[in-house]
Image (cartoon, rainbow, N blue to C red; front, side, top):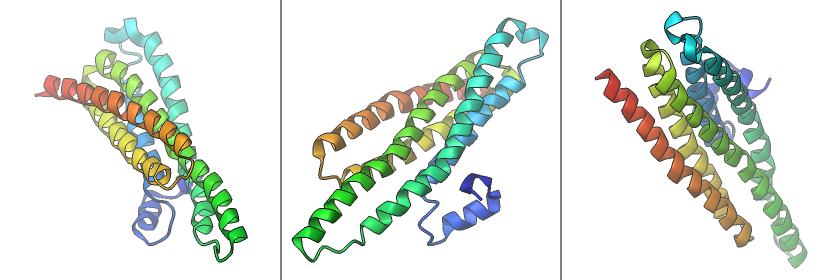
Length: 209
């Protein structure tokens, strides 16, 4: 059974244990999926309403994109666990001889790149979700805008959480050029999309108060 198919209680119990997975990356993917799904909820509560007939086609398009993203984020929960296991084993490789040191460095280099690939993808998906929630918040049913606000807050948290899983691995990389490329992309997403998420949240909160 993949991690995304576990019950909420089972997943959270494992998260709270000393088991190496799921961890922060998988939790970020789950939170991002929940946030994106809340955007879908806004769309579902908007379509079919005469008041919102002029945006119905757009809502259906947004919902299709949103479902694709939250399903991809659920898949990334397991993928994050899959790439972490080889890295955890690589840290334990011997380095008593020059040959062993060289082999460990080679394996570590590849495992660190693999371990970064999933949280980077989680970040990208959360950025896409934030963009979609912006449209939901602006054009969706006014009765559901609180869900858009919650959704964007979750996606922002997931984006920030996944970034830490990138940075902890890029810090350990010996290929500094590659590491800095990833850091630059991650920092760019953080700078742009945390600000956008804050704007969306503040707009929703302002309409509710």
